[in-house]
Image 1 (cartoon, rainbow, N blue to C red):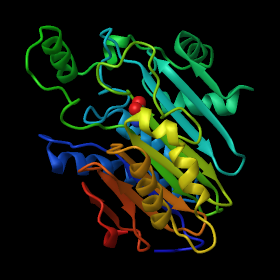
Image 2 (cartoon, protein in one colour):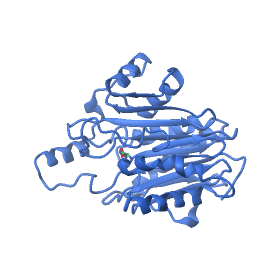
Image 3 (cartoon, rainbow, N blue to C red):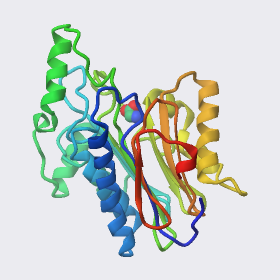
Length: 308
Ligand code: GLY
């Protein structure tokens, strides 16, 4: 569907199998994130504000693999990555392996707006946060009881399943504002049991997220090692030209990725400069919430083409 001139918004809570989760609760959470972003857009606010605040909601929700709720790595810590992209300037801000901030996507935005750089990682990123007035939290504060239990079980070589086997929940948001500017935001705790220092697609501009006002914006989710080899978001957004809408671009991008990398376990949400909205995933599930042309918020755990 194409609605030029109107704000548009779509959010995702991560591509994965999502086995054993409370579907109603997950969908309520993505709906809440979309509602927060939509209030901003409806009031004439910017796409950047909308995607940041929508993502903050999911970073706070332990159902998602971002912020509080991030997977625990092999060292027993949380290391988080995030990327925010501004389609009007082609600027972005990224952080990787941050351990002491509650809202990695907001730190990414500060990198974009308050430094002359684009990407900070590790202790340096946490120190930058402190310098910019962001309160630091103890790493343990970002660990949910559920993830701790799963980590301890893995340590004991018990057979308890972590979300590694049940689904993944990187979160992201893409918006088009009334001024015609596009933005995307993506935030993750990465993969469960990842080695310390491992960084996936999320903070890689063009892979985990991308925004360019003339074309479109996207946020990716899934197994980063597959997404970042293919520059998924940039490739998909580049296709939104000459009558190809966001949905066609998303589908073509994931079809091509699947041809090159069997079972890539990836998903993407996209908005075109024309206002078209798209979503596609190769996993069984990807919770999304989007705003229709009438301003209604719709949600689903599985994208079906007719929905958007
Ligand atoms: N897509 C998130 C990650 O692989 O880290």
